[in-house]
Length: 116
Image 1 (cartoon, rainbow, N blue to C red):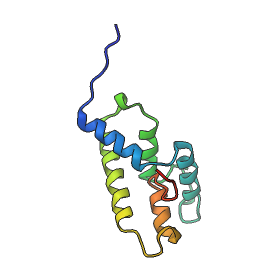
Image 2 (tube, rainbow, N blue to C red):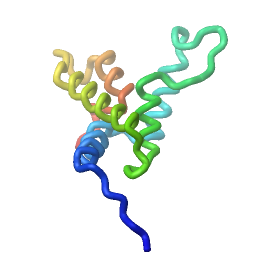
Image 3 (cartoon, helix red, strand yellow):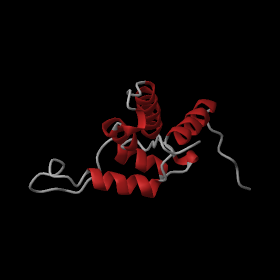
Image 4 (cartoon, rainbow, N blue to C red):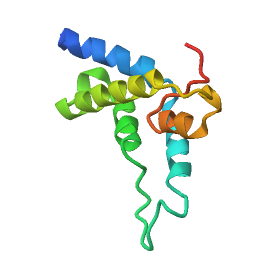
């Protein structure tokens, strides 16, 4: 008999909020982070090709099932939700045309050009 693992209702809410805010598919986020991490300033003389943080952590959580989340994963999700919401709330005058702002959101897996 298979038993369903019950999750804390708060984790369910965080999971749903996280996946609503992180609206970029994991492969697209991975490609974006690789692009961001490949600039002249990104790597030293001996690059280890790690993806930039916190995007790497977000990408890791995206690869998990809800029942496999660790307390650290839940904290990554909370942090991502807070960071994304903070950036969205501080929308610059130029809005979507402000590349620095939009790229900061993309680093977190949120694309303001994606309609919900």
